[in-house]
Length: 336
Ligand code: NAP
Image 1: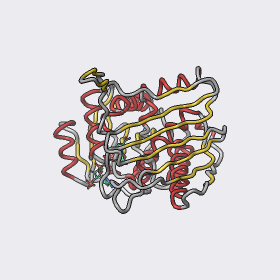
Image 2: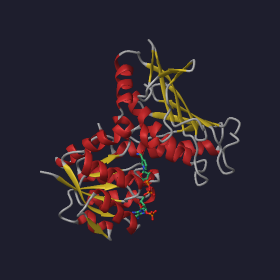
Image 3: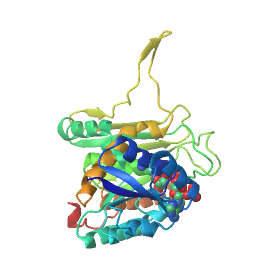
């Protein structure tokens, strides 16, 4: 039996997930969509979900008896309301990051899920599904010994003028915050941010690059370079230094050339291309679990921890150079 999915928010990622569910993956269909931008909803239905119903009211979509599960792909500020409504309806919910734009909002979702008594929420932290990160985790867990340090980088070629300094945390670092915690099976205890000399390509309201230093409960020190005006490419780097050796995230596949006295390999320019397989895998996992009435993958608790850590990192930006403590309450038993 096919899982009937309703998608709220049919912009870039909502349309791409609809395409993925209806044209690439098995076991589910997008049968309904909602968007405040009616043109986006109509385009999504015409291009990827012919025959799907366009709901004017997102809450009516969530409550509709014909909808088994919901994808929340609208603006971040709206996620909390729609995820809470989906939990209240007892339906599985895939929520794009961020789970909520405040730690308090993410906590309300955790509390609602705990009260519901079973997992219903998967957060769209797709890097956990990337084959490269999975291979890296296997090496860290079984080959290189207990981790001591992590050196990571998140570089984009350029950003628009709407991208301001805190977005380097909320929109960019958020993926490292989640995937490194998963990779190390550890929690953060503090954050510090250092700003090197500013790139001449960074606009007035953006301090770029920046280096975020996170320390974990097990004593690992992580440095993440965020550089969103690198010009040369979209480049994700991660190296884990362990007691017995070092493991590095593999480069994305690309044809190597020996040409004109140069050994060359292309570098991706668009973030959409870097984790393309991971989106397929995360939604496959969602469809599998939602078909059984539950959720898999990154949890609401992971979304909450990411929100608490993001807030600490933004505070660390504002208090440049100061170490900000990250205090997490006890993890509810449901999250293992
Ligand atoms: P987008 O292209 O702006 O699309 C968002 C869509 O939601 C737009 O059509 C927007 O309408 C609509 N919308 C806004 N408020 C709404 C509401 N209250 N109810 C229903 N629809 C509403 O943005 P996007 O790039 O797809 O990003 C959407 C979410 O996915 C964000 O949270 C983003 O962080 C996340 N995301 C995650 C990844 C990832 O790698 N995991 C990648 C991209 C995006 P308007 O056109 O009128 O604004």
